[in-house]
Length: 499
Ligand SMILES: Cc1cc2nc3c(=O)[nH]c(=O)nc-3n(C[C@H](O)[C@H](O)[C@H](O)COP(=O)(O)OP(=O)(O)OC[C@H]3O[C@@H](n4cnc5c(N)ncnc54)[C@H](O)[C@@H]3O)c2cc1C
Image (cartoon, rainbow, N blue to C red; front, side, top):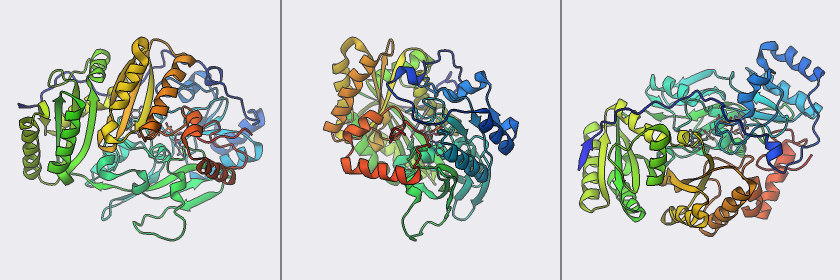
C-alpha cells in the first residue's frame, strides 16, 4: 500500500562538527617520506602578510586544527599556515612565490573530501578558497552561472532559485563543499543520473598553474571547439595541476514538480527489477535513484535516531521525479508504483510531494555519511560496478570479513556507484590492507572502478598504481611534470613523485 509521508522527528543535517577524537598525524600513520620542500620560515610569513594582510593568515594552533583534519577525521596534517586569498591575482602571487621557494601547498575548498586530498600530509601550506566566494553573474536566458571557486554549493543553489534555476549537482555535503572542490573532484552526487557530471556542466574555468600563470578558460558558451579542451585537465585533478579560481556552470531549470518515493524491497534482484521498471515508466522525469541496505538503515537509526518511514525491509529505494507538470508527473509515478506493487517488486512504499516533506525524506539518505562519524572507525569506499554485480561486492566483502567488521552498502544505483562502508572497532594497518587488497582486486575482477566520484586523493594512491594502464600512468606523470615541475601542488596525492 502506498501511504502519504509523515516522518516526524527527523533532525536537520548538523553542519557544525566537533573534533572530539582527533586522528594521529598522517605522516605517523602511513609509510610516506616528506619531499625535499623548504620549511616555513619567518621571511615567508612576512611575504604573505604583506600580500594578504595579517587577518588572512591562520597560524594559531587551535585554529589550524579544522584545516588540518578532514571531515571524517581519518587524516591529519601538520600545516603551520593557512592562506586565505580573495582574488585570482593573490592566488597567482602565492603560487609564484611558493614555486620559487619550493614550498609545498595544499588547496582546500570546503574540506568535505573523502579521500584525504584536501588536508596536508606534512606541513604543506594550505590555500583555503573560502573567501573567494563571489558570484559574478547569472545569465537569465541560458542559466549560466559565473562565480569564484570558493562559493558554497548550497548558497549557489539558493541564489539560482531566485531566478528559476538550480545547480546541476546536489550532495549531502552541499552546506559546506565549494564549487571549486566539486570541480576539482569531479563530484557526482544525487542527480548525476539526470544532469551528468562536471565534465558536462562546466562550460569554462579559470585556473592558476604552479608557477603562478593564470589560464583563462572562462568560456560560457555551450559550443566552443577552439582547440584542446583544456578545462577538462582541471576537472577531477584534485588540486595537483592547478588551483581553480573561477568557474562557469551550465545550470538546470528548476523543476516545478518534485516527488519522492521511498520503497521497501525484499532482495537485490527485486531492486534491479524496480530500477528497470522506473527507467521505463518514469523516463525523462526520473532524477535520482538511490539504494540502501537494511544494515545501513539500522546504523543510521542507531546513530542518528532517524527511522525508515515505512518500517523495516532488507532494501530501500529512494526514487525522485522532477518535471514541469504536477498532474502528469504524479500520474506517471502512481502508475509506476502500482506496477511495482502488482508485480511484487516492492513490498511497501510512501510518497512525498510537499517540498518540506520531500526535503525531510531526502535527509534519511543524505545523513548516512553523518552516522559514520559517530564512533566506530569506518572505512569509506566509493566504487563503480556493472549494475548486475552492484551488490555482489557487498556480499563478498561481508564473507571475506566475517566477524572482523560490519559492512554497509548504499549508493547512487542509477549510476552504478556503490558506497561500501566497513565499521571496525579500531583502525589498524592490517585490517585496512585485509579489506582493501581484497576489495579492490574484486572490483577489478568485476570490471568496475576503484573510484566512482571521490577521487584518488591520498587514500587510494597505492591502488591507482596497481590498476591503471601503465601508459596512462606515464602520461599522467608527464602532464604533472609539465604543469608543476617542482611538484609543489598537493604532493603525496593522486599522482606523486618524490621531489
Ligand atoms: C556528508 C557528505 C556527503 C558527500 N556526498 C558526496 C556525493 O554524493 N558525491 C560526491 O561526489 N562526493 C560527495 N562527498 C565528498 C565531497 O563532498 C566532494 O568530494 C566535494 O566535491 C568536495 O568539495 P570540497 O569543497 O569540500 O573540497 P575539499 O574537500 O576541500 O577538496 C577536495 C579536493 O579538491 C581539491 N580542491 C578543492 N578546491 C580546489 C580548488 N579551488 N582548486 C584546486 N583544487 C581544489 C583539494 O586539494 C582536494 O584534493 C560527500 C562528503 C560528505 C562529507
